[in-house]
Length: 137
Image 1 (tube, rainbow, N blue to C red):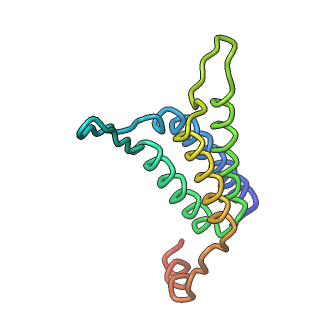
Image 2 (cartoon, one colour):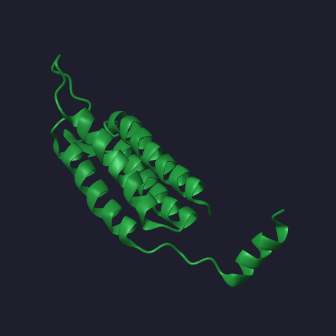
């Protein structure tokens, strides 16, 4: 992989992280509320979906590029855009408020995202590498 392609892959990982953070800040607020016998059960399906997508993308970025830095940049892009939307704007609006669900969303995303970004990328087997080299022109 040439240097320009590596830099492009790293910038793409960063951009994907920012996009997931921007969209996830709004999707994470979705929840299902179930009421039975005067009690409420809240299932935060939006936060679960966003965190699962984030974790899958972090692992995929590391494996596709063969570099941990791509996974870390994707996580950094997500975290930067999520924290940006968690700060109060001049009009007083927040996209990520300060509730238990939102703190859980941030905590789980950071802890598990950091763990997955730390894992080394999977090695490409010699057979797969030779097959790819034989088909490239």
